[in-house]
Image (cartoon, rainbow, N blue to C red; front, top):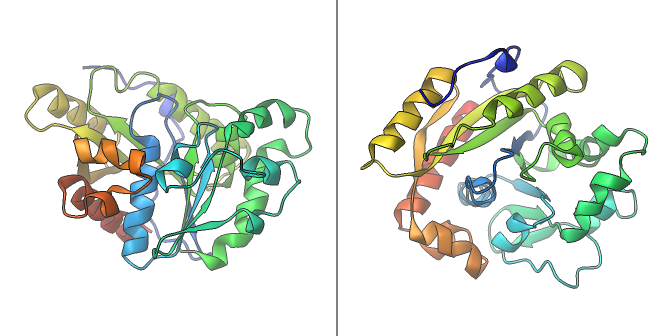
Length: 274
């Protein structure tokens, strides 16, 4: 086995019941980089929008990968989510529409990195994002928050604001490393800041069914999250990797490719869960 279950996961529940308070807010989170987190946030949002759902994507990663993934510039931008978190801008003034989809985006820039320090002494520092996006529930069906690859204050804000978390896990060696720390953070936020937080789903990314390793990782994750793992696996795909470079979700860049098909199937599962 790649890892053992431990007490860090205690108290972290899975909950796929429907919510009746407007948009479902989902934080796409994994502190390990390179697992397809931003790729999943962008392409899942696009697939949900393609299905007619109203979606808001909030980029909470200073790298701004979700921002550029929708073709929005990170350079020479006067304001971003950073300014809204600090009370310097209204979130409505930041929202930009992607193409013909029902998808809106709140962009991020490298400026956001400063928020980790500037919010440390701020009042209600863990609930700044919640205060910004809770009022938007009535306008959307889903709000996806793309988190930074860390467990810092920005991610804590996302977990505090969210109804659930989507955890992308790559089907590669060491993929499960550090997952216990993530689950421990979810448990702590659930205990102290957001009692409704749950694991909404786990999505396997970069899957290659030809390898024994991929199957082993999937089996391990299913053992730990027997009810949370999405049936849809996101395949390893050159087209999925290329799409961000063209500022497009893969559903636009390669609409008939296996990556686009997989994200549409994932969107169907998400809609079935809540």
